[in-house]
Length: 327
Image 1 (cartoon, rainbow, N blue to C red):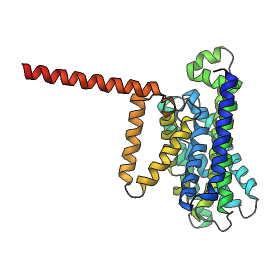
Image 2 (tube, one colour):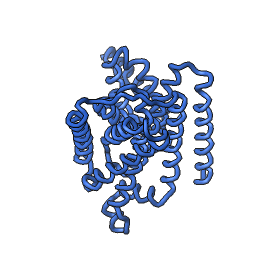
Image 3 (cartoon, rainbow, N blue to C red):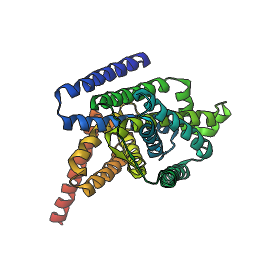
Image 4 (tube, one colour):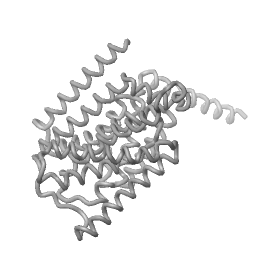
């Protein structure tokens, strides 16, 4: 397929999925809509995370920091600002944090970058906890002004759709090519004239904007928020797992994995949380071993290859058993 045909296919798929998701509250139960809302949250988070971390190879664990900053921005200003303005403020503050954080740590790679982004996330959480204790005398915020559930759902649908649209646009832009060049060979990209520091900060900020906006929108789902809730490291870890298992370098992989994870979470997390965490780990191991490009790379040829491998293993096992009996 040509690039134009692939773009047309992606746009048609996105329009169909968006239309179906928009109509879902009209006929589905509250439980299904709630599950769909969680799914949309992780679609927005993992798609925006993959937009930067997929092509560059940088493993960011700062998603929960941006999510928490956006959530607190919304909780503090929602009674004074319109809904859209509170979402924009959450995204804007997350971008400011991302630019400051990225300027400090984006010269590092691999484990060092991942550990430092996680450490800075914990630092922000502890700083907000300390500030609340010192100046407010309590930890956490009660949300007294919240929009209708339908408004929250449509907002999250818009953010998830916008995250995928942004990924489509960035992949076909000079910024996307520059990030791919950084992932391939950062030093060579620098030699060819790419301002790698600027490109990385911009990509990191785009990721943060979506995470901050998502946190601002999802904060109203709880009537009470505190730093441990909205800066929960599990949000960041699960975002990374979803992106990696779905295929961080693909467009639709994070969406596919977000749906799988949402169903898995509702089936296991509340009743069997240990089994849920084990299932996440098992999925990650299987993806690394057998689907290094994620669930989005799963094709009929892949399944046939697995079938042939299993059949070959079974024939070799039977042959060895037959030799043992004859011997």
